[in-house]
Length: 304
Image 1 (tube, one colour):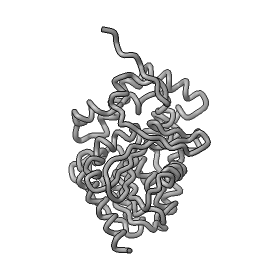
Image 2 (tube, helix red, strand yellow):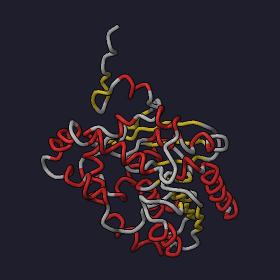
Image 3 (cartoon, rainbow, N blue to C red):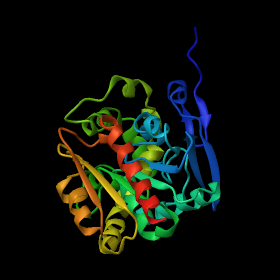
């Protein structure tokens, strides 16, 4: 029997195995060659979920989305430049710019005052969203957020792919070191636990780890410093309810230096620490994500 043929997609050629693991998406045209891909499930007050680094919307879909969808209308997005969402070069990689593009998509969908839930880099985008557009959302749930500027492994591993010639470099690494490196990184995110077998079997690693996506990761890393400086300087002005969740065993983003400290800088922010929990807390504790989201909606009702 012959092997299935590769499948063409808007982001290049995907293997049949990867294509079979994709969540069906809809796509919004944001103009200027930019698009926002999203998937939707559930009914109720709207919640927008934003994935982190080396991920696509499937990560959130396999984590807290099923539990959230029991009580909310959930829209999971591919961050601009990732998954099936297109952006227009490095200028769109800045966390505040990504937030603005997601805001354009949310406006096009007609969502009224959604809760914005983000993980890791996606949490940085969610916080930037709340700082820019406070009157349009109910609040922010930040999961294992990166909140303040610091030297990071992403700068070393992916930053060089954002320079001129980076596409060639990323293609070369995709045929050499990436097949060994990326599984190590994906598994490290789940420490001190292990990646669930169901996740390993369902997540489309070939989508998040292709050469084009890793150039986008490099552009994100290059723009991270400026975005986080801007956010750090503005946290004290935040006017939306914020709930922050962090694991005490996160080796990817230090909970004390980021989530906990940000909760002291953001007026009224609430921090919840999760014991024996690492970076992928939204898979280990989806019930905590649901509780934080419900609390944000409750705060909004109290203000009405």
